[in-house]
Length: 175
Image (cartoon, rainbow, N blue to C red; front, side, top):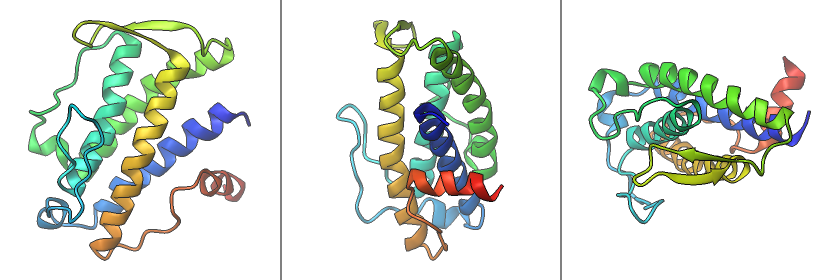
């Protein structure tokens, strides 16, 4: 297994576990304001609830998958409520993950992490390296996963582990 396999696999595995756990919660719990709201990006508002943290992790994958595959910008602030349930977010994550990992697996196979692509979804369009973009997704989704795990625990959900890549690697041995 190479580092891309570990980091991309654990990112998807850990992210996927969170909406699965959130299925046990009701809407009031999912939308309960967080005690310690954290502003992740300077251009964005703080994540205000567990639902918003989960939604933003899924949206991150959707946006980058669209940028990598030439897709259109997913709705960011106008996502219908039916698409914001934990089950719907899981389905959206699965679709986005497929496109995201499909492109990046090919990048890995070509050893093309320094190659660039134009993200036409940015206003104005921006150029990124594949490796830099992948590191960005891993970094900021990891931060949000830690916040989501803390919020789930605060709502009384039993969350195993703490988000470490070694948990993902161990899960592969058990499978």
